[in-house]
Length: 341
Image (tube, rainbow, N blue to C red; front, side):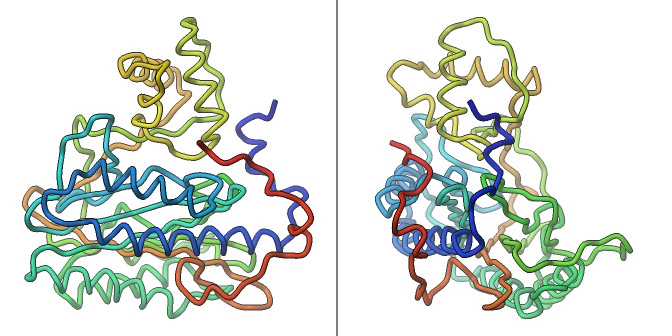
């Protein structure tokens, strides 16, 4: 049986195959985001949007989810994914962030868009999008992340909004959503040890513009996303052990929703929540609480995934054109992972 850290190994996967998996996931991400964002209208249940996106991700041919679908409203910047039985709906006005994650054989596409329901906030959305474009303009092998952050901050502040300092773009790995390098939204002090972007690396560049302070805090009581850590925790209850086993097999080192586990017939929500608390207390799982700027503010997000290649330069995998082919080596064998049901 593989350990959690074994899943991140790329042994036996060629560079051509790796790029293909990233691009396949990216095309699925584009299709799902383009379709599902049309659902974001006042009164639509948030859980309906989450579940529609996740169903479509699998129908489009992904091997699974990079993370649970996020639908974060107004001052909530990130990490709101509906709990089981969520009754919240899209409000009549404001800024709605739709953030989705897909993986193909562990290679992730991370992409997000903001839908504006208040005309006066159109420049907030534009600030996030233009900040992204300004950062992408200088990205290549050898670019320092701090320079990307400087460009993003200069652009967002030119619209009289603030970038969110605690939220960053991030390096991606196989079954690894947050790698060892970050792409900040702000200018950061010079660090002589700063690592440049390198060929062969993939990243999600995500920009956040806020009408508030530009700083986020954890929202009390909104903690519906978790991720397993590579530490075995002894669980006495047989149902708890089954919950852990199911989570381990299906989601590995990627974030998962409490809602997904609570939907199983053999698991009730109380037992799922108890198990997650037990795992968290033992250091076997980490939560992703919702993050928000000050009350009354609005946040916009924009995000795409890219990979830096030796021969084709920078490829944004979650934007067209999608003119790639299946490598010959993969035409003779199926993908390594079974799709989630």
